[in-house]
Length: 429
Ligand code: HEM
Figure 1 (cartoon, helix red, strand yellow):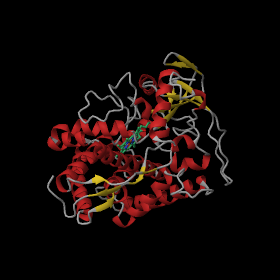
Figure 2 (spheres, rainbow, N blue to C red; figure 1 turned 90 degrees about the horizontal axis):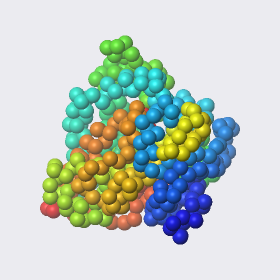
Figure 3 (cartoon, rainbow, N blue to C red; figure 1 turned 180 degrees about the vertical axis):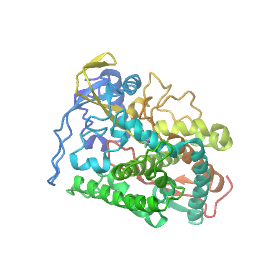
Figure 4 (cartoon, helix red, strand yellow; figure 1 turned 120 degrees about the horizontal axis):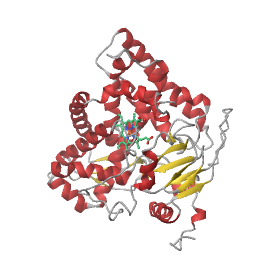
C-alpha cells in the first residue's frame, strides 16, 4: 500500500492497456506514487496475442523509471543504457519489422552517429530557416480553409495538417499523397487503438503493411531523385554529400518512417493538447495573447512538458550497473517515463499547474540529454509557435467545445479528435 491510501502500488500495471484507459487523474496519481515510493518499479511483461504467424521475441518485464533525476542519469550514459539492444519500444523488435522500423532511434554509436550525421543536413540552421517560411505559409492556408466554418475537428483539420505538410514538403512527397501518409502513420502509432486497427485485427500485420507501403512510396521517390535531384531532403539523402556519405534504400525507408511517426504525431498532439490547455486555463491564454512574442518561448516548452506527447522510450542495460543508486542487471529493460519525469515534484514547482511563463523548465519532452535528443525539437517549437500565433491573430475566440477523444496507447499521449468552435470568418479578440 502506498502513502496514498487509495493506491496499491502492487496493482499498478503499466503494461496493461486498461491502465491507459483510466481517467487522467488516476494515472497521474499512480505515477506520483511510483515516483515517491517505487521509482524503479518492476512491471510484468505485456500480454500480447497476435493471431498472425509472426514470431514474437520473448516477452519480458521491465523497470519503469519514473523520476526526473533517474531519466537524466540513464540518458547521459548511452553506453550503459543503450537503445540498440532489442529496440526502444517495450517489445524487442521482431525480425520482419527491422526493415521498416529499424531506424537510428533504435541504434547505438557508431551506426547511430553515422546516420545522425547524414540526416542532420536537413536540420542545419540554414535549412530550418527555409522551413520557417514554409511553416508560416502552411499555417496560413490551414486557417484559411476552416475560418468560415465556425467549427472544426481541431486535430484532423488543423493540428495534424501542419507537421504533415512540413515533413512531406521536406522530403518532396507530393500533396496527393498527404492523406496516404497521414493514414499510415496513424496505424503505426495508433495500432493499439480500435479506431486504427479494429479489435481482433492483427496489429503486427497492420504495422508491417503500413511500413511496407510507406517504404514503397519513399523508395520510388528516392529512385527518381537519384536520376533527377531536386533541392529536397530525399535528394540530399540518396546522393552522396560532401563527405561522400549517403543513405542506402532501406536506410532511407526506415528514416522516412521515423520522420513520419516521430515528427508528425508528436507535433500534432502537442498542438492539440496546447489548444485544450489554453481553453481550460483562460488566464494563461490571456497572458500569452497579451504578449505573444514575449511569452511564446516559455509557453511552447510548457505545452510540450504538460502534453509529453512521447510517454516513454526504452533503454537496455548493457552490463550490471546502478540507476538512482538501485542495482540493475545486464539485459534489463528500463522504460524511461518522460511523461512522469515531467511531473516530478522534486524538479517542477506545482507540476500540475499549466504555467505559460514557467522558467526554468527542464522538461524531457524531447528526450533526455544524450545522443538521441529529438532531432526535430527546433522545428517542432517553430511549428507550435507559428500555429498558435496564426490562430490567436485570425480566430482569437477559438476554443474547445467538447470532450477530446483520446488515443488508447501507453506510448503516445494522443488526441484523435477535438471539437472546436469560433466565430465564422474570424473575430476581434
Ligand atoms: C512536440 C514534438 C516532438 C516531440 C515531443 C518529440 C519527442 C522526441 C523524443 C522524446 C525523442 C527521443 C527518443 C529517445 O529518447 O530515444 C525524439 C527523437 C527524435 N525525433 Fe522528435 N519529437 C517531436 C518532434 C519532432 C519533429 C518535428 C521531428 C522531425 C521532423 C522529429 C524527429 C525526431 C528524430 C529523427 C528522433 C530520433 C533522434 C535519434 O535517435 O538520434 N521529432 N523526439
